[in-house]
Amino acid sequence: MMRVLITGIAGFLGINLAREYLKKGWEVHGIDDLSVGERSWLPNAVYFIKQNISKEFSLRGIRPNLVIHLASRKIPRDGNSQKGLIENTSGLLRMAKFAYRAKIKFIYLSTSDVYGKNTSWKEDSDLVMGPTDVMRWSYAVSKIWGEQLLYSMPNNFKFNIIRLFGTYGPYHALSWTAGPQSVFISQAIKKEPITIHGDGMQKRAFQYVDDAIDGIIRVAESDYKREVFNIGNPNESITIDDLSRLIWKLVNPTRMRPAINIPHSSYKYEEIPERVPDISKARELLGFEPKISLEEGLRRTIKWQKTVM
Image (tube, rainbow, N blue to C red; front, side, top):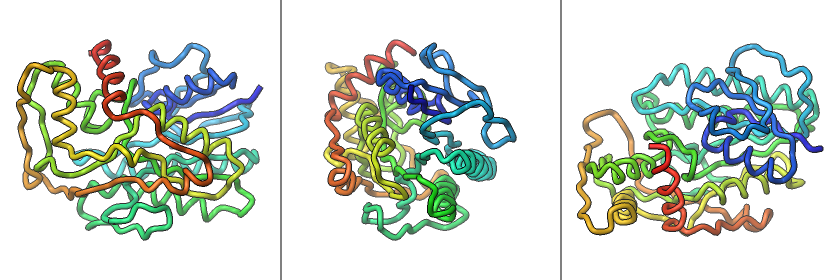
């Protein structure tokens, strides 16, 4: 039986990925410190280890065929950037060394945030960050460091990097760490005003989690190595204001949407006006093609979110 080891397994992507690998007949092992994740949402069939991977621990006895490294501390605009930088980098180093020594293929979940201020979102684009005193760049920098770390390892280390664009769906966090759609859905269900940061004209592309999981598995099970792939849905680009209107309409079709705009001047932050994935490489090499429309994905997510609020 094939075995996969997933770090950050109790998080949004980890839960969905574990469920899919179990359906495929794999044995699933997972590690999570439960600082954010929900153990109760994981299938009972998962072999679970509670552990912060930035700390010393033993992986003796675990012999996976594949390691998928999802574990990461997302650094919010008002969070502890130092803790995130240290834990994201030290945890990756520990897991990458484990996979290299065991001669196991390694998949690293990076982020579209690494594109920074770029207006091109191809995998071979330059990565341009903002000022170092703006906290929002800390997360992106920790992920860039991770990508550089993997490429610094010996050439026989088999790894791939996935730069994931905005993803939503069942089991996402009910807070801003999951993206605006999660908060908008909660506010719409409670019939509270929608809170929008800035003017809402910033444009993003959202992909439903089933499409993201399909992309991750295609990368993981491909014969490619030492490659970077964008995984996202370029067909579902929308402004944040229009996203809030769509969610409100799906939840409250007969009510007008109330909204509150929070100016960025109220805190030190740099907004990216647009970020839409270029998935031409994943299309050509992996046959990846997102299938779930934004409206259908939001309907499924709203249905799930109502059950956990």
